[in-house]
Length: 426
Picture 1: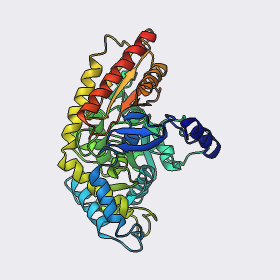
Picture 2 (picture 1 turned 60 degrees about the vertical axis):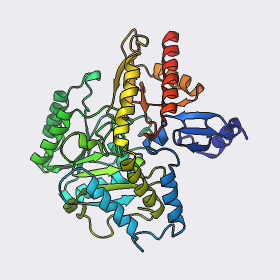
Picture 3 (picture 1 turned 180 degrees about the vertical axis):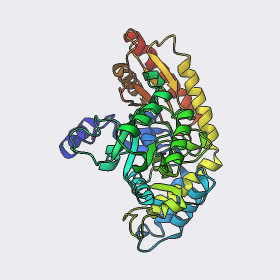
């Protein structure tokens, strides 16, 4: 059965709302490589959107899952609990930033983690309003969709969003918004739209994911922490995409030297198995009453077993330092191409959470067309890339941190060829 036939079947059977970046139908995968149904090999610089930071089918993750399969697969922790759930909560409580007592809950998806963080923040503060930022992405459920700072494709056609959600401009100097301007906008928001004494929480990605891989400037994150402390507002760090060694630290908030009150995480935690979590200050996490939090599949024992193995691999294979090394090589290679590829507007990102942003060489305006041209050329050569950004003009790099050196070198060569060819055609 070839990919064309599968595409026809997909179009007939699956809602068009489930978008697809490629028409590759995976048959098998190993570490940073995927083979499709026709036997074609691809280097994976998407990693399931930062899910398999430890690579496809890491042997230790597979071994842990097999062992758990031989014991039990599901009891619902709220009915018959199990020790590995408790142990994983203990590990996250110890590993997340903040020298204070913490507690954790497990759910299934990143959007679900965000929903629960909002519930917890509202229960703990007795307040309703939440402030998010333009360009942020927090999920596709209704509350997380309301928090997301991008209309197309996430909000369009879905009607009214939940209330008491406000957006402030995210500081991106490349696009004309400074830290000072963002803080001034927050001040105006407090004066014109919402009393800070009604605000339960700010929610922010330490590095915007879908929004374009823009890191939160240190001065802005510090100012948010100070505003929270001044007004009794909670700080929620959405680490769904930034977590688990991607930025060169286990969590991106470690780059700032202070802690959020609540953290959401998912993606890389499960190494390919669906699990998400909220970790935060113990007294805040205890605000909802028994039964107020949970979910049938939350903290599934198979996914919990995988998560334990992921944490072990990150520690034992020193993936935080490897992320720094890989990211430095990638950024250096991209920077070396600036003269040959004048469409490069910026190269950025901590650790191995990197991006290259493109502009039209003549107008200086964001160029989604050029970014997509590079993506398609790379795909033809066997390299899977993802675009992102409010303007669609950013290519983000999310290869497994375990990628083999030889495969990484090969991928950099394909990337350079694709950039040079695209620049010549522009």
